[in-house]
Image 1 (cartoon, rainbow, N blue to C red):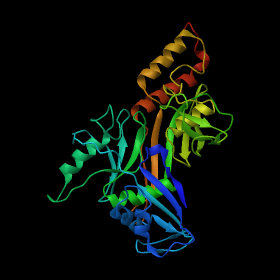
Image 2: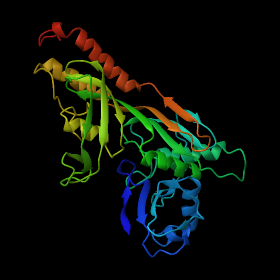
Image 3: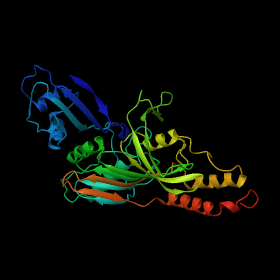
Image 4: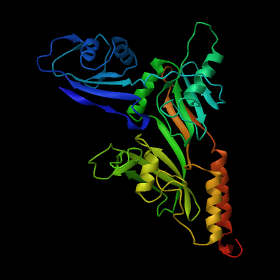
Length: 350
């Protein structure tokens, strides 16, 4: 029996999960041959790499590629899903590197940078920049290093991004991301105030049935995929709030869609309705103030601030964090000042 493969939506199908149940009459067969015959376009090398990474599990136990499949075995496998073949042009684009070793590199991505080349964005991406960086930093002339994506963040979201430097590291990290054992925190400035200091948002997320570019929450689970976001209030400014979000799952636009769902769209998030005044006064000066804030941060106020993961080779737990970017800091400081002097602001003197 074969179950439909599942794809991790947040990362645009960067990895995939299959589950099989061997038939009652299944004869003894090496698991790599078994899987090759059942997974379309899966090479033996790809299957064996998954096995080496510990990504093939039979009856809840990790197995090697020479394991013999038996009747009624329950088999699962997680593999990296290669992106469409696009010629990667190395480009000398500045990078902020937070951590690097021979297996992984952690980047603090600037807002406005696309992660991987695709239609409309063939150059200027993080992958273009990393390809150039690896070419220039190669110590051995015979060594070839290329970036292997394991997750993505939106173009206009800033912050921490983990990239593998080998296919084996990518496959192992894919398993961590698929099973949500990666620790990720985001800082976000959202519209409105919260009654509680912390909370959890649960609701299936899937592409809107009206607009494929927008993600929608389906609370009854009739569509989309299970998604859980935990949030904690960091600082209140009355009309907007600075929060920390922890992802229990990883879905496309998860924080942005969940926050809109509970009535707190991200500040200046055009896609999800946060680029208009949702809270505040009708004073002309207040409108000017908000427009000035929008000019300072012409994007959604969302930053991937920390990432914790088990190193794919050493097994060591690594925790990487970073500061808020200048645009978010500047807007937050403006709100601090506004809150401090809010009682004195009127339409005539503000």
